[in-house]
Image (cartoon, rainbow, N blue to C red):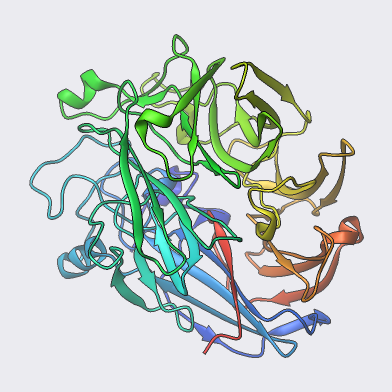
Length: 469
């Protein structure tokens, strides 16, 4: 399906190269012993283009494919499925790619609009539903967690026909889903929503920001939500001429909007900091008059690419330098304190989601490898209270992806559980899943599951508690 384009695009070859089949394989080979209490599924979304891209392929463009490893009774089962979106169906009928990617000119007259909702970015488990999400925000797709089949779009019982961007947050205490949507074509450029523990939409309101932005994440505390207005944006003049050009405007500040969980635009209080970009937050919580935020900060997401004509930014390669940061926003004085926690470049962080919105110590971050493509050569466990970290490093040529934390049944300590992640061997294409004890992180895996096929490097993961039927 993919021709010579793969020879010249770093995200269509090697550990990123797509796969074109869907498998179900039971009783996988296990080295070590899978913990008895590990019951559920580690699922990860991925960009996996089905047809040859018609233009300049970007890693963010590929069709969504979910890879899942289910655990029960000390055994493991692997399966993968495309997310069968409307655009997937259109291209299936056409027998070729119909939409271009984010580096290509905007085309008119395409079914469903100029943007292809690939649903390739994130997964969230909420109200007994597994939802697949797209980074630019569009209708979610509901998947059957037992076999990954696509059940259709999810619209909160007809209450919300709009989008849900990647990285909504599920409050582990109330069960609420907190999310955003954004647009770069017309106001409102940012909208904010809350759904109940049963999946009923209880709030969806516009939030005023100065113009279209490329937004990606938010954070929640017990009572508040933190929205991010960052100066990475689509050039408005280019959009008017049917072109897409991403710019990082250092003349603009980074703004953090804090509002009550069930508030609206009038309740947002904005705090300004130096320009930066944040792909992913880790956690946020309240300490007295302050709201504390942990996230991975990128000083400049758009350095120019060497050897190109200047029209393609280094975002094409995703050669980023994100670092762990802590912000403190004082809701009484309006002051902001911003501090860097570590000098090691990390991204795609995860934590114990049972503590989301409460004070936490531990974060599990993939470490960015010193390569021209975005690859991770190990995991770092941070103890932000003690100011320490410990690393699990991979052999040369092996790369990991976003992990998940799974609490041990009956766990009381924050790090009493397991960290699970795909590991990819660039030498022979073999892929495995590693299970580590989170409270003995540097000791290495307690179990390794050998997969029956190469799994491409992908994006974001979630844990679906089991057993799955």
